Length: 204
Ligand SMILES: Cc1cc2nc3c(=O)[nH]c(=O)nc-3n(C[C@H](O)[C@H](O)[C@H](O)COP(=O)(O)O)c2cc1C
Image 1 (cartoon, rainbow, N blue to C red):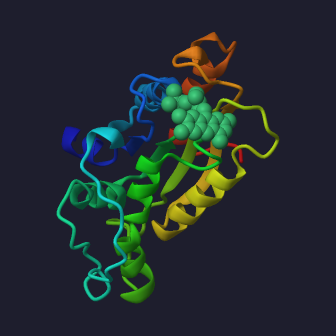
Image 2: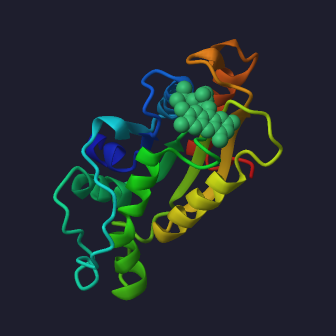
């Protein structure tokens, strides 16, 4: 009985993409994950800046096998990404895109792109399960299109992973480390965003 219960728990993978530890996106991500956990999800957060992830070399070493030839932390992160039911990618905006750390991780999913589009095999470990993901971000400036290029990148990445992009939680005008705490609703919003993500009804 309890084993069955464990087996049905939603697996939520949080990815912290900022090089600034305990910064604004880290704080938001923690609340999103707390919200997911409060709904009974099994949560795991990885901090990309603490991992060893080289950029993709476009060596095509994965083209026949779908396995990246670079032996670093991306090997186990591929497995986590293929297994997750929900993915929460948190990255601040750096020069209108995601951080270099985040982009290196995304580019290394080229091996999963090969699995899907070249080998025509399922990317998800459980292809019958519905998978979805969201983007959490902040930027220092207040621009109407601040998050659009990063969202396009995240959508393209999720498509490769067979993850439905179901929304974003983004805040502009947040620059100093930890200043998200001064926002009137952001941390509360993040908690309920995590709850909604596990209930499956995040608005686009
Ligand atoms: C290299 C670099 C590039 C940045 N580029 C932008 C940018 O293009 N637009 C913007 O609004 N903020 C930009 N920022 C500001 C960050 O998005 C902002 O400080 C954010 O709060 C950092 O989030 P974090 O605390 O989670 O790291 C940049 C910051 C750095 C260090």
